[in-house]
Image (cartoon, rainbow, N blue to C red; front, side):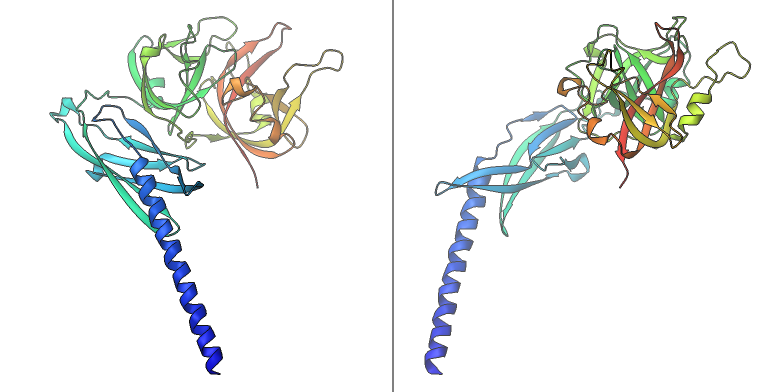
Length: 353
C-alpha cells in the first residue's frame, strides 16, 4: 500500500511539473505575440480600421495561432466586429463631428491575446480626428426626392452585373440603382461595402428601360467609405413570387401598369442554371429562380459578389437547392430578340436548411 501511495504521489508531482511547464510556455506564447502586434496610426480619421483577429507566433520553432480581441476607450466611440474566418477584426469608429463643435479626442486601443487560457495585453495610444461628417439620407428618402436633386445616400453596395455600369445600394428601407457611366466603382467597391454615395436623383430616359429609378454618380470621389464586410440588409423586402413577377404588366402605357422599378422582393424557389441550347451553349450559365410549376425568372446577373472570381462562383453550388432570394428590380428591358421582361438582380441568396 505504501508503495502505491508513493507511486501516486510521484505521478502527481510529475503531472504538476508538466502543467507548470505547459502554463509557462502558454504565457511565453501570448507575451511573444503581444509584443509583435502593432497599430501605428497616431491620428485616426477613417470610419473603419482592420485589425488582426488572430496572430501566428513561433516559440521553439513551433508555430502557434493565438486569438486577438480588441477594446478601446472611450468605449462609446468604437464598435468591433470579427470576420467570418476570425482572422480580422473591424474597428468601426465614431469620429468627432466638427459641425457639432467637437474636437480631436485622445483614445487607447487594447489588444488582448489569448492562448489555452493564457492572456497578455498591449495598448496603443492614438487620437480620433474631428471631421466634417456627411449627413446622408436613406434609400427610401432618395427615391422620394425630386429629379435632379443632389443628395447623399447611405447603404450597402451590391454589384449588379459583371458587365453593367452600376450597382445597387441597399439599406433597411429598400434598394436603389446607382448609375456609374465610367464604371469607376469597379475594383474600388466590393460586395458588402457600406458607403455614402454623392449623386443626383435621376432616371434612365432610354425607351427600352425608361422606368429605371436611379441615382447618377460618376467618379470614385463620389464615394465615402463607411465600413466593409457588412451584411446586406433586406428588412424592406416585400413578399412576392415567380408568378407575381411574370404577371406584371410590361407596358408603361397600360392602365394596369405598376412601376416596380426599385422594388426589393423576397421570393422562395429553386436555384436553376440554364447553360443555353446544346447547339450553342453559354460560356457561363444564366441563373434563374424556379417555382414548383416550372415557371422561372432569370437574373440580370451571373454573380452578386465579385465577378473576378468567376461569374458563377456564388451560384453554382446552390443549383437544385431551395433558397430565399432577395431581388432588386432594375427595369423593363426589350432584348435583341424582341422579348420584353422585367430585369431583377439578386442582392442576397440564402439556401434553406
